[in-house]
Image (cartoon, rainbow, N blue to C red):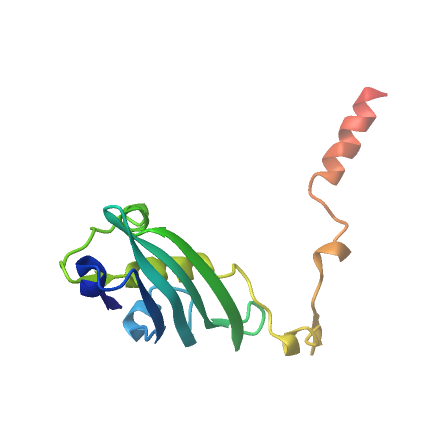
Length: 161
């Protein structure tokens, strides 16, 4: 996502507003847990601050992730706020700073922030009703009373007496 910054550099404006839909290449999704990204919109502005560009962005959209129990796709909405100086944000992600004099590539910053927001586990609403099947049932962590250390504790209690 390249943003033209010539008007900032020349002093014609003091701020560039952004309101763009972000399209992510399907090949990038293959290296993540994401099945798809939908309706990703980047809004905000870029301003010139001393020798760097100050970003104030908001990224909204929906991640499509596999359900942890059924592997069915689950839509997970997200809202991300990104604030900071361009060179500093790019350095945090190990990316090179500006490659072009007239544009800023903010995609690496946005992409890394989306990856950080991926939840470790999502469960679809219909998976909650899926608790029993033919010859099996789902056991919650709360129902498990058989701790492997419970018997060890009993042995230690006996030796103290």
